Length: 364
Image 1 (cartoon, one colour):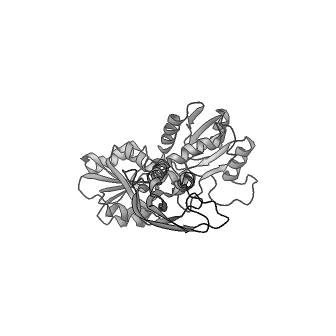
Image 2: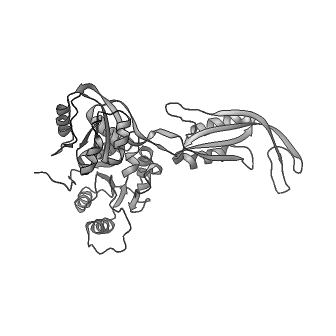
Image 3: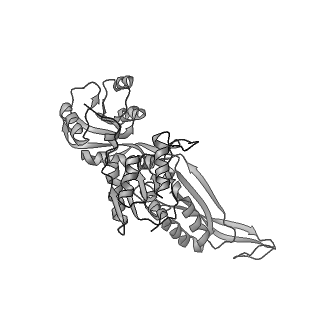
């Protein structure tokens, strides 16, 4: 198996098309056509992680955080980023970062947090917009059902929990083939009238090349008429954060003690207690201050995230409890998620969970 085949499995879990614009995801180091010897999964790629990969004969590191986040103008080992990249290249080890692609995935970072808290009735806290597209095309009516089936097989027509969704309308199409044309219907130089069906299907943007390939492969016309429109609709299955409910309400202090234990954190910083039970819980792995208003709007009793600044705790405004459990702590189970997923997909070489704690923050 080649590195690019493993990458395809990862892209099925968390398509890079849905990563945030500021992020640096994908294959950061290495050749995608290299044969795999083993995969090491980690939260961060440090020198000790590259050493661990060498010891375990792994030539691909799948890292949640990207080791290279912005441009590097020289490689002389003057900082930890350069040293990691240099060592990886020296030992022919590839590095793949998944980061906000997995943050935005339905079964990603935030779902894993919800899983640890055993939350039910989960849904995306901030659904992403602008990643749904619509294909409009025209086909001879007698071929329309066949073409729709092939588009569905390529991934078009899925809306939420529904599949094979489309809209069709009948009409008359006209065209006149020139002398250079090779028409499948009609004659050269004569305007042809054909009973046609207009087909409309939506699809997630990361499947666009696959959808267009299916359209051209299975449409009978020499020149295929089609339109692609980007929609602003929210995608309820892609986005930041998640909200769910506890099976049974918990008293505030007991709940804070509970999350301290579940996420193995040395400290839970929180806003003022409100004197009411905790039932509805919002989570966002990593730095989540931007989602405070979303958690409040969703009616959450508590919002669990990290990297909150002093003044941001005031934004609770006695409407919600803000709980900062630490950046590493909020994302620590992500590598378990990736390992579990890859082991189900791949069985012919080792998928290893790194045993190194890469948390740069320590507690007394």
